[in-house]
Image 1: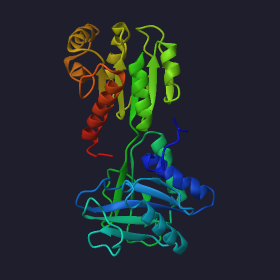
Image 2 (image 1 turned 90 degrees about the vertical axis):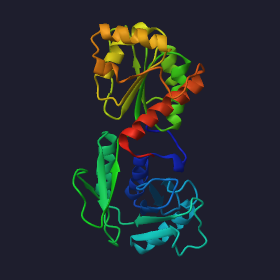
Image 3 (image 1 turned 90 degrees about the horizontal axis):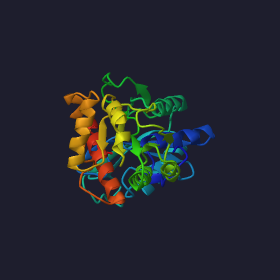
Image 4 (image 1 turned 180 degrees about the vertical axis):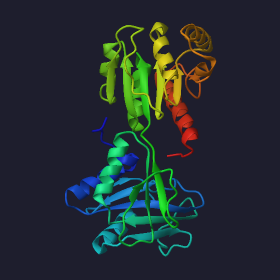
Length: 321
């Protein structure tokens, strides 16, 4: 849901940009801090960002709590001076009072000359679920980032950061497994679509979902938002509801399609889908039984299924976030 409130360190990538844009829109200064170099292990990946306001508020996470306070103070100085800068913490840093528990070192770029029009473009692209990249020259004292074609190599010395659409999960089915997974998906800041034939399930999921879809009859599959950054999890107990829906998902760009049930159920499901016209290549995409580990409890099943989805997407994108 777009209006859900999250702790500042748990906001998504796009929310960090939106925080900075809101500050600029209100006529207040803002800084965008980006990890541009890592030496050794660290808790956050290259490109992780933190947006800081002139009132010491922030959105995003750079270190999981180790550096945020120090960075917020450094951002205040940079905003007052109006000059971008690069900071170094850890090994080789002049900040001896700031230690990194992970060891190693980290380089960060502080941008206080943000081009609001580029920020708005980036947010619009993200909300339209389009991949994009930004690039900037860390050595430029007053230049901000620019949105670039992600297929074109940036000029030498520039840092480029790629943005992927937010993970979307389409949950289809009914019962407590759907509700438990909806709650967990909200905590993970997932864009959530819930489709169910049961009004009670839809009502239980309403606080957590971005979109609710009422299923009417088993063979009438509604339009579902299925793109390459969408996972589909079918959690039906009445399997007559899942055939056409699963077939549509398997033929879509969705990167993950999984279904609830035992191995025996999975064999029967494969026969039913084959009878509907599913090809061997399409059937090979189906994950089942769903989840990283077996479970018969709704909450642990939700953890298992979400973990499998995140694992598959991380392998697909090559970036852990």
